[in-house]
Amino acid sequence: MSEELTCVSQYGNYPSRPLPRLRADWSHATRRLIAGALCVACAGALFVPDAAIAAEWVDVGGTQYNAGTAAGDDAGTWAWDGADDMKLNGYNGGAIKAEGKLNIAYEGKNTVKTEPDYTGAAIKAQDGTSQKAELNITSSNSTDELNVTAEADAIKSTGDLSISGPGTVNTTSTASDGIEAKGNLSITGSGTVNATGGTEGIQSKGKTTIDSSGTVIAKGGEGYGIAAGSDLVIKSGGKVEANSIEEAAIWAKDGINISGGSQVKANSEGDLAVDTEGSLAVTNASLDASGVEYGVYAYKGVTLDHATVTVRTSASGGQAVALITDGDDIVIKNGSIVDAFAEGEFSAAISTRNHRPNIAGGHIYISDSVVKAIARYVESGSDGPDHYSNDQSGEVIPEHRGMNLGIFAQTSEGVTPATISIVRSTVTAEGDTAAIFALAMSADGKAIGTIEIEGASILTPEGGKVIDYRNKEEFSEDVVYEAGQTIGTGDVTIDSPYNEAVAKNAVIAPLEETKPEEKPGETKPEEKPAEQKPAEQQMPVTSSKAKPATAKKGLPATGDASLAGFATTAFAGASALLAGLLRRRRG
Image (tube, rainbow, N blue to C red; front, side, top):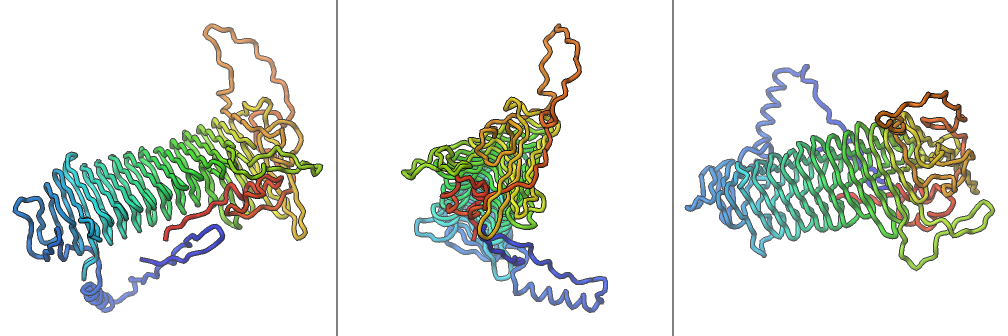
């Protein structure tokens, strides 16, 4: 396994690209060198575990059987051919272990259960002297059933692990994982896999693939519902349900890809519902995620393509973001239906940002889709003072509580300033502070966040349009500028997100949906030349390029320290808080 370099920042650990392996140019190799290499390879295979070929031994209920001789019981509830294959048919007994590769085919109802004082897994394949571990579990009929219970891991492989077929596999671990693979993990077929763990429900150190038209249910206790050490791929139209009490319901290190009509539900009672250090892609599939502080977090971007996505998050008295990325963009397209809801003292329904130089992010692209994004305020319930802010005269006024933004894009160091693009789409956005906001922060005031609307009109608020926001704050050591746009009314550039001109509710719809319906038999009135409106009021609305704006200096990008000054006039503090995520990396 190749090692990866790990970068450490205030935002958490994230892996850099692994160094590529050097490959020999075999076109210049002589026959002698090739022959020598083959000899070395053959000799090495005798001493180093390599590809799994067969089990070197199996242990059934505490009795070990060595390779080369078939074994089984008189009742025929289990049988091993002395090599790769084992059959279970009505087995009801203790743990099954093997060194090397083991294929288990189960029929009928089978139970594998360890004794209370047994410290090992109930079914396990481990590396042998000369063979790497591989565990494959399969069934032939939908009535087949395999029930596995242990205090430690229920089913485990120190190499790859696969579960296939139309049968049902139920695993329960009271103190460890329901299913664990130190290598890759795959679940295929049309059956049901139900895994419950005291820590993780289903875990792999490598790639996890759920290529199933059946049902997979994973429940985690102290750990994740589903945890993938690299990519997580879910396809082929099955149902996947993941739950966790203390961690994310679904976690993947390198990325999550959901496609092919699959229906995924993720619920976490702890923090995040869906969490990945890579990207999230949902294509021709559905995702329903519910978390406490964060619904879906994908560091390297979100792409929803003909997808149905519902995200809910509620953190009474805290910060809540339903759908967020801070290392790439959010793309919603091709008939996707997205419903995002965030409820907290500080909340955003859909949010993206760029906060480091030369890193993508800070852009939201919505095309030919239906999006609903609602962020609401919830009282903190604390005994502390209310939040206050200063008006332009310096007077302290108790009117600004928290910050809640429906759709929010922000850049602070990005090459391309923040953009929210809405093309031929129906968008309903609501925020107790602002419905839609695009913001760019810079040291020279040249970066401007923009809202672009094409093939659609602003229906709410009445007379609504894209208005400009600019602010500047001078400190003893530097000056920070903010410039952006929001949906609102009026012709004056605002300098506070709490300005009454900012729309808290916004509805945008394709142009054809804004035309009045014609009643049957109704005579169409003679059309008159359209009245020319001022440029800023014409529809469809496109981005207006604001002049360099001024801004306040941002608060710390992560952690609860930014809460204290969040509701001051410094909008930078808001952008830092909403995207500041306390990352939890898997060790």
